[in-house]
Structure formats: structure tokens, C-alpha cells
Amino acid sequence: MTKFISLKTSLPGPKSQEIAKRREKYIAKPMGSSLSPCYIAHGEGALVTDVDGNQFIDLTGGWGCLAVGHTHKKVVAAVKDQAEKYLHTDFTAVPYESLVELAEKLVKLAPGNTPKAAAFFNSGAEAVENAVKIARAHTRRPAIIVFENAFHGRTLLTMTMTHKAMPYKYHFGPFAPEIYRLPFPSPSHPMANEDFEKILVNTVTPESVAAIVIEPIQGEGGFNVPQEGFLEYLRKLTDKYGMLLVTDEIQSGIGRTGKFFAIENWDIEPDIICLAKSLAAGLPLSAVIAKKEITDSLPGGCIGGTYVGNPVACRAALEVIKIIKEENLLGRAVKIGEKLKERFLEMKDKYSLVGDVHGIGAMMAIELVKDRKTKEPATQETAQIVQECIKNGVFIATAGINKNLLRMLVSLEITDEQLDEALDVLERAMGKV
Ligand SMILES: Cc1ncc(COP(=O)(O)O)c(C=O)c1O
Image (cartoon, rainbow, N blue to C red; front, side):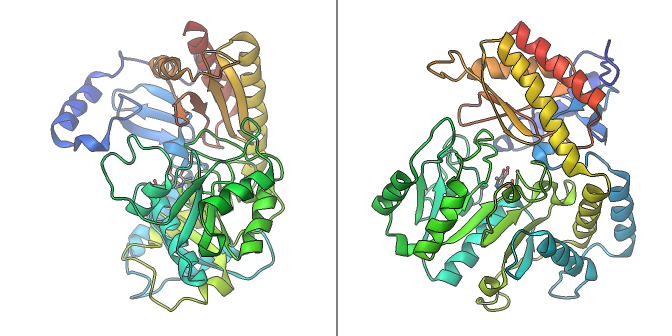
């Protein structure tokens, strides 16, 4: 018996099937397929109801955009209020206070004592792209260092910075120049710091490098946590060569790891931080927070865009920051993470398919392998488990270059009961596969 999952039709139900037919006809194929074959009618917290009245537990949170869940009442109220006042002005035409207030809040929350300033954009890719523009202009250097398994977006520059070729780089070249990829040292792929520096120096002249861009915990790449001491070492290395350290927290930020900024899990101050996804509860908004001496070194008007820092999205983001504090969602992320880890380790004891469990806070993933020794990715089995979960009312996301990890991007509003129910479905799916 399930309490939250309620499947009333076969999946997809008749209404979803009818929409899918129209989708087939009118939606451009490169936009890809959807995880869920069912179309949403309503979402609340971690629950999704589809157009046929079926209710699911959503562990994907819109690919990590819904730390405060679907339709949080306070976000909805702020959005409604703002929508009735004005939807758009372009901050460079007629400015509004909510954008200033949001910048102030984010700058005050950001780690370290160096004065900072914020700029706003629409998507994660745009934030990364602008972080690179700022870093290049400030340092007057062209090169950017990124990592194996990185994901930074799909624009020309960020797709170049992203590791995986298919589908993200499909015949989309020529790619942007001056992007250099280095190994991401993690507990499962450790590397001595000196060796990392050797590879760097052999790959690119360090004095031509504007920035090292790193996800403090890799998202799409499989929730890989850097090996102990690596981020602190990167801070020293970037300082040594006059490079900037840019953290892409688009997936790992806004509370998911139990800290507001993912980088707060380490005692370092990056030069530039990129945020998006959960920042505005799913509305398109991203931010670049940089040391003020860096942003002050560029002329006014050299970055921006018509829609950046939309007032409705800014109001939503202000609510997200308030909700995280009022509801202690940072503490909740830690608790969710503990539960996930415990259940995943139990699954590891039971099923040889589970190779590893890793992550920080609620950003927890389970790696599926055909053989624990060779670590051969169990890609097909992972896909089967996802399908089995959907069939039984749970949406769950994969990750990793080989798509052999299940990653938790669940809303921090999920209740223990809902989480248990979803994990029971996952465990049964794993047993079946
Ligand atoms: C770490 C990271 N950076 C950048 C992006 C790109 O964000 P967007 O899809 O909003 O452009 C993503 C999206 O998944 C991400 O996870």
C-alpha cells in the first residue's frame, strides 16, 4: 500500500498519450524525450499529479531546481504579487529594488570577507559564460581550465567546457578555443597534488590561464566529491599563478549539500561563484557573485541582457532565501542526506549491483556497476531501474558520463514518509533488476 503514490490509470494515461501525439508532431526532435511519459497538472512539495490524476513522488526536482519544492506557498504569493505590479522593465531601463536586495542578500551570504558584487542572468550556462568573460577581462588572459566529467551548459562556450560529447556536442563544432581539460581528483580517482600541477603546466602555460572553473561537487558528472584537500590546494595553485578560482554551484548550491553555498563545505573563498537552478525555485534566474575588485575592473555595460534578473524571478529568489532560513532547510538537507546514505548502504549490502555511494548532504548518488572490482558501468540496468521506478510512481534522475548513477535532486521539503515510500519503490526496482 502506498500513501502518496496513487496510480489510477496505466502509464501514460489517456490524456498524457494524447498530448504526446501532439508533441511528436510539433516539438523539435533535438529537444529530446522526457523522463516522465506523463504530463504534469499540478506539483506540490515533492509530489506531482499528472493530467490523468496519477500522483508521483518526484526525486528529480526539475533537475535540481526545486530545493523549496513545487509551488511553495510563499514563492507563489510573491510571484503573484509581483506579476500584478510589473513583469519586466529591464533593470538597465527602469531599475527595481528586488534585484538590489537580492544582490545584497547573496553577497552577504557568500563565504569570505572580501567585498563582493553580484550580476544576474537567466540560465546556468549564461552565468558560467559571464564568469568566464569577467575572468578573462580582469586577468587579460585567454585560457580556461575545466575538468573531466564537467557539465557547464550548452552554449558554444559552456558546451565546449562540458566534457561529454554525445549528445551535448553533437556535430556542434567548431568549439570555443582556449579550453583545457584536466583530471578531477576524487576518492575513487585520486591523484597527488604535485602530479596535477605537472599535468597543468604541461598542458597550458599557467600564466595564460584566466581561471580554473570547477563544480565543487560534480552534478551531471556523477556527484563526484573532490579528493580531500584538493579544493584548498586549487586555491593555493590559482593564487600562485595569478589565475581566478571560479566555482560552478549551479547544481550543488542553494542548500542541497547542507550549506547555502556548496563551497562552504570547505574553508576557502573563491573569486567567482555561479548560481542558478534552485535560486528562484525553478524560475529562470542565475547569478554570478564575484570579488568586487574583479567586477570593478570591467567597464559598465559590458555584460547583461534584456531579461536578466527578471523582477518576478528576483522576488521568488528572495522568498527561497527566506524559506531556507525559516524552515532550516540546511539542517533538513543534512538529515535527508543521512537517510539516503543509510538506505543506499543497506542496498549496497544487499545488491552487488551497487558499487559506491557518494555525495554530500542531500546531494547523494548511488553508482551501479556490473562488477565491483572492474567498476564496469551498469548503464542498461540503471535505465531499467529508472523505468521500473516510474512505472511504480517515482521519478528519479540518472547521472554520470556512462549514465550509471542514480542521483538525488529531491526537494528539501520532502517528508520522511514520502522519502521512505520513494526509497521502498527504488529498492524493489533494484531487487527486480
Ligand atoms: C553544474 C552546472 N553548471 C551549469 C549548468 C547549465 O545550466 P542551464 O541548464 O541552466 O544553462 C548545469 C545544468 O545542469 C549544471 O548542473
